[in-house]
Length: 505
Image (cartoon, rainbow, N blue to C red; front, side, top):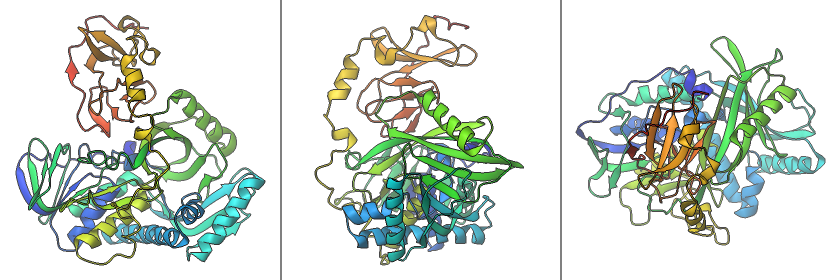
């Protein structure tokens, strides 16, 4: 569980169990959805947010907590792949997002440990130092709060950094809970444990949860992988998984937030919560479809935090997945050129607190009939770049076919049921069906279909995150089969639990 989710308390909004009508329906209770909902409510619209789980427990609840327009070396990247004007628009939108969050925290009185800090992208080698100098110079030229500095407040030596001043950090889940409180009421609603299962474009548009519907003039789909996408954004983004740990801080506190240019990339943030000081260290990222030793990734982060930052034993660890747009820019606008009333926010490239906020403000202007200077750059229906295959287009069908053809017992090299220990999972064949079997901490067995509901690949057990993961396109499920992250939208079907007892160990 993430530090943010574990220390935020639990919300208790009702599930949607009736049919209601509002001006705008919002699918997703993360940063983008709740920011859009509040902005639209402030503009005089009634809104209804439908969240599949609890507010803030999705991707936003597993973030670093950085609120900044400095996204590693994004400006030289965008200026090179697009243009300096595109890089400027991206920076302006994200800098506006920083200030919007600061205003909302103050105006709504949200207690979310918000504080202003400087953010650094640092270099440890001469080669990366040159790249940092270039980023600092370009950022300043674009009008952003960018300077190069050789003074970097880290407890280990670095060559220098680009620094953006007057950025911020916050407790991500507490902030989202504050947004939800401001949205709910006066004709607007927040519904939890209400997974949207279908969208219908029209006048009105309809969001169907299976137990109730929301009828609205417009629908905003603000989920990591858009519901109802039909593959459009799945082909223009790829899912990227990354890892975070939180450990007790050393006596010397870090002043600022940090990310490295050198590989392996490391992201650093310090925060005081409930009388304890923690340091967050992140990194070890990879495409969600790439295999790897999750436990080893956490061990490497723990070693970095201990050896370089002087922290104690790891108290929290978690992973998350984010959509990375193949051309480097988030997607904001109509879900497709044919969509009249369904709009989307996706591809926030791992900087969701600001990109999600910026996207929500852009879409709010669009729905209110106002001009937004950054809407064209973030346009969801821009032409996708050629020459770079997204993850789901690489050797289409080859990985799925290989996994589906793998003999039972060879899928991810898992054990048989008889060898399962509490906390373990395996995939076996029962009555001719591939079945995912999990032994809970008490040794009780639980079973669900092992076939991913997205495109039919065989799932694998992730022992470190205690999830069922799809190796083809990155969908993740809880041990009871509930969707955690898409592109899958349907839960794994339940199966009868085997009678073979788990190994007591």
